[in-house]
Image (cartoon, rainbow, N blue to C red; front, top):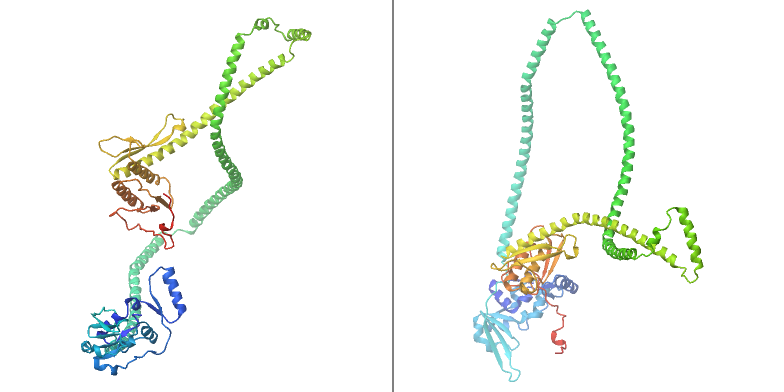
Length: 578
């Protein structure tokens, strides 16, 4: 609104600035209600801006007039109403009349203060000089009281100086005419300059042609001299025709001989080329076969890798089965040795014949005797044979398990040689960054890989060593030696060190400063800011319920403070049982 209003006299601006609030002066005024809704939706709702919007109905004329003519109250020292001292669109003037009633507020000189009793009762607000007067009527006694206060301008409203505007417009027209004349002169001069440039280029081209001819003259003179020398030499070396014919014949013969040799070489080269083309086709076929076999090998390698993972999973199962089988085998071997020592029929076995025929006769004889023994269990021999078969089977299983154990041990060693250096490099990287971070906070820290045995993978682990005081030694991080704040510092530093191993676009750090004292919290925050604001680092979201005063910040970071929404219920609305 303030941009559409113009006070006729700058001295009168203070009256409007004391009647119309700054809120209304800075408000957007729309003639259409739909424009009001659209403006509020776009600026207040979507862009979250705090603005004021008012609706002034469209009008082509001012609809408000003073109730009392100014001539009727001029004797009180009044000179005009506020509506007579301002210019603007009729819609805005009508809006101010309906809102602030500027058509009923008169202004005057300082003499108004002496005639306050003569002012009509329906004038409640008026101005006199630098004083503002507000009339109040008591509801009980009906007595009238006037509140007077000193006013001053705020330099918000501007006035229109018509004479100065006319002078500036005339000056502008004069400058435009002068500018047009200068532009016309400039255009004519530019045309002459272009014409001179064209003539200059023609002259320069002629000069370059003449210079080039002058530079070629010594060369032409030298060529003429050489041609004259050749002519003289040819005259001196004149040879008779028969000698020339004989020389030509010899040269032609030599040329034909060279042509024949070159043709033979060409034939040999063509034969080689034909063989090379055949070899090329064979090589293309071999290449296609190689690619197919290579793809098969790649698939086999992938399958082998999958089998390797499955084999590693089976290692523990096979190892446990092997240990169980070895225990069973040792038990069976002990039983067999004991049975061998206690065998009473060994002497009888030694008495048996050595040939196959004699053994068969002995078997038949013993079989006949066995059949004659009615009370003997018929399953003893079958059970004996079954036990022998079990012993043989267990021996084979033991050999196979031992063979598999050696194979799996070789696979474990191969995988260990590939896996352990990678783990060691990771620990070295962690230790470097962890030590650097701790050193930046005037502490000492290390990250170590611990284990009991080379292949005892269950005992592998990461141990964090810290030193927070200069008179102490490096100690392992645990809940018994260090305080909660010291452990929080070590864990936060170790977590930041881990970020250098993996690369991601952004990370979220949630309440990393919990449990720390103010000194350690400040060090961790400064280290986090220094680390995360470097070029090429991932974006970090650091969530914390509090921030220490006077922290170190960086132009690459932003601080967002989250408040509860207005729809959140107050805690007084919830019933708590204590």
